[in-house]
Image (cartoon, rainbow, N blue to C red):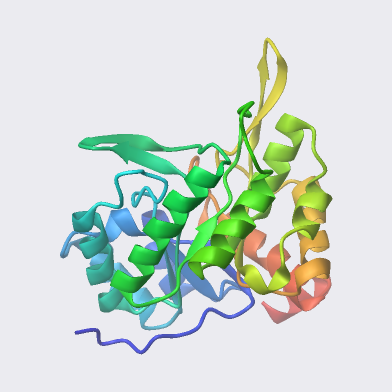
Length: 289
């Protein structure tokens, strides 16, 4: 039985919870209003991670973000993985639960990656079936996150946003709109990121993600990689503002998963998101910190 009451995630800035920051979070005031954990890092029954998560959860709302359900797998979601996820959810009562528009397993083979899907009607049916079963098992609505993309299949039947919206409507789930992923994919495939955002119905968006990315030189030219290893760039902040203008404020998470910075650096990124969400100036934020 959980000792927590479920807390809704506010339409303010949160960050991904990292072990390097546990103590600072408990000691320092900031504009971070909620935290997200990767489900698979907390599926053991105990240990130091759960000790700190318990303390932090007592003070902040929590979101659980999965990377291992493989909602795009034709042979369905793993029942053991789903059971472990439900145990974690029941323990901490998160305000949001999300997963990815991807697949990572086939039969007994599990791959440590979020692999892309063809945007076809068959793939839509697979996702809708798996998401529906997941929501029924968890007894709650989940969110699905749009991917970052590095190549396009020549037999796609839908654009990515059409594919995503179709799934959300048919499965009755919400969308976790990763603005950085939209930007990365738009640069890699030369499409209009603003148009992508404009074609996502605002009532389907339950959360936003922001992150940094890298630019790598390939024989074919520059490729942007969603590596979550740096600050959010100006172009992504601009696209974020466009997103807020179109759909309104939503809970917004700063992701920083590689080359994890100091707590103060990460909290500063959340403070910028806080400014966008509340229309505060940088000076207002500094004075209210």
